[in-house]
Image 1 (cartoon, rainbow, N blue to C red):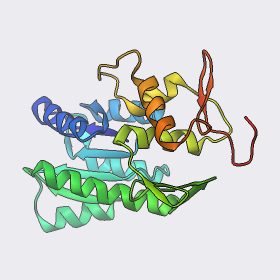
Image 2: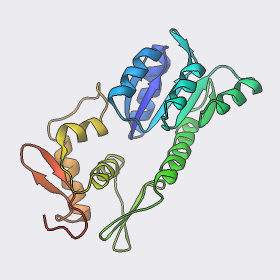
Image 3: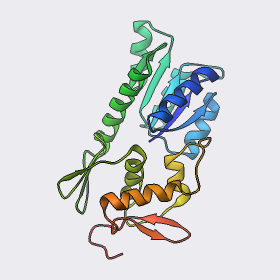
Image 4: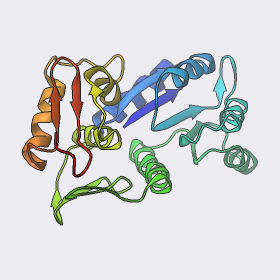
Length: 223
């Protein structure tokens, strides 16, 4: 899961980034609304954390424009504006939740999970692929009725590949989906995740296209 943090305070942004990375999220940061717009134009994010008091504009105006443009990415507002009218306005403008600073990291992570479950649930409650049954909201996988325990990045990798079933996904695209720009990436990290998925889900699920990337055959296809 990839998260965009829109926050101009370096201390707060770095603290949030560390918390989210420890929880298994890939994180990118934007200290201005302009950089946030640029990031959304080039990358796909699963969730946005938005501070309202930004140096180049008001976060609510930015959120209003985002929704008018058709972006449905879940947005959690983080702000010191704790009055009831401010909370109501934030939700009315399209926020999925509203957190008043300061807040506990555990509460933030819990509210993020709720927003992601709602988003995934609206998009597709259950994904079925051959023997696999994947619940994106609960982040669970069953193979032939038996639960399979996947780590956070293993699950995210599986989702990217299954949603692109029948198409080759490049190594670069997979790495971008799993890791933020400033996150150290070992050269064999992706291969390790692929190895673990094959061990847990079977060698026939994930196919390698040497020098390009990986793909999951469509159900019934002979790869």
